[in-house]
Length: 519
Figure 1 (cartoon, rainbow, N blue to C red):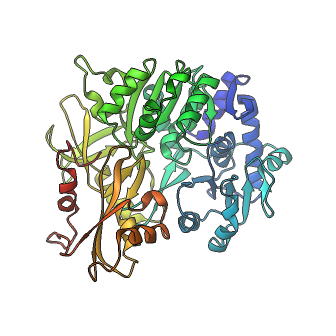
Figure 2: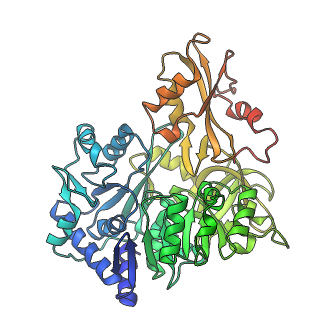
Figure 3: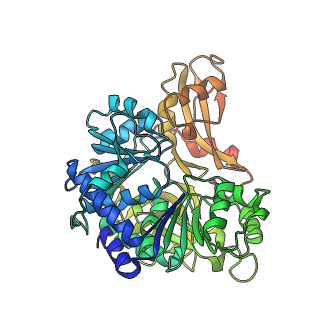
């Protein structure tokens, strides 16, 4: 199993059919394949050989897709970087992965000098934008034009294909090692639930650095579909792309769906081509899905649940369960049933399976599960103990195999589809000299699902105001991770017998009246 096989098969079957549409550029599968092979040749000329890492920091585009295929074709390992991070976080990912080459577009070309100061091993930067190439960078199109195509490096199976960084409960990002086999198995799992097929047009609107869009990076190619790109999500930009390019499929996080279906200009666009919408990253509020079913009657909705360590699909709930009447009504409140090549169990703290309807930890087994965490063998062993990937999510399974997520074993907050790990935020807040103790939790938010909230005890009461704490956090971590609100307490935060802060106790008052303690 290899990523390259997906492309070679597509060229055999659909060489003259349109593979990619980006702005005013449209290319066939034959042209796409040729550019991949030539960029792979360019990477090899820059010294990329087996297992070496190549990173990208950019918004969605056809060149991003070429990067995903050319890097393993050259024998390398791709490292997509989250565009929403701060410069010190970019630098950490690049240094930790040992990436020697970085691709950037116009949005990030301006920070390259700052990054080079912090990433000593960064040898080359390749500019993939459409403007004038900045000094000291290589131009992507020139590199493709001047490089000879090369044969595929032949990596596959359990060879490392990509590093996707995720936050960690220790506050330190971890590189999730995903193999060629992981990606191909996940793609096979995605085919029926994402409904990839010949003639489909997939809109890349979710960020391509995210593993969720990775399902389409490889699935739309396996399905012989057309990839359509916009740089990122806006309601109008998404609606315009659907109308202009007759988009049939896309993936959105619930926040995007909410913004889309409540946009007053929706009725001005022809959305009738849109047949399949996959959503994930957080549960969909019932009121939003009910409205979405009403205003987008041609579209079927699928809820996909997973995590980066599982490449990422674990379960899904298809359109037949997104109904408000009949025997399947309400099933969309679940995370669905296991995808075809994945085994799911709910285990207790001793890794024993719990009875149906009993809450435990959602655990996963299959060829989709990661090789491990980059250079973190102890954390790998803990996560994959006894042969099962421990997701850190608490949930239960019903008598028909539907999984319901009710809480998080790990202290993770999902705000607007972005994962925020509380320990990382707490590490930033503890650097403020006035902070004696803090706990970061998710509290309900109508638009974002959850809002990052800090509960803080100061060394001296009233020494600082909430805004100062928030502003301080913005100097250290990405904006989406920073607290949006702060409550101050004068008593010590509640502790367990082991001395750990009891976040479930702190969280409880904020979630009174809610069905579950995540949103």
